[in-house]
Length: 130
Image 1: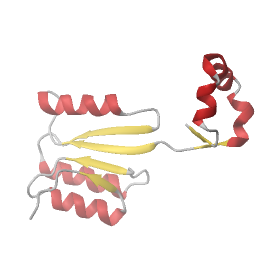
Image 2: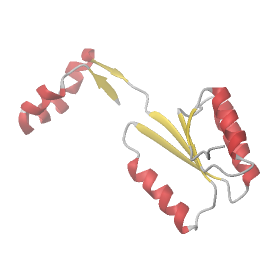
Image 3: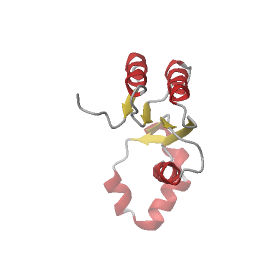
Image 4: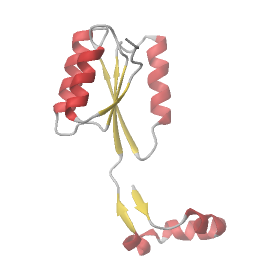
């Protein structure tokens, strides 16, 4: 994936032929572009494959992941302690995610939040108000 300093307005006004040429000769404008690492997102599915709701949620995330998002899915198999273990390994590992998505469960959520926050990993979960 590349980030370029070329205005999208200029590309759009070139028309289909111009866009095709821009893609074909993309290496010629390499000095204007630089490599961008895809955003790493980890989703801890609290269940196992076969649960209709979580399978649908997983499919939705996979469909939403784009070329600049690397989505990894981990299954806790309905074991809250496994969810904590997965989260701790992820945020302490060499390839920690940029974002961690998980289901906030009583007795688990606060531990996962603490691990993510201490590692500087952003998170997305439905956190209940106190």
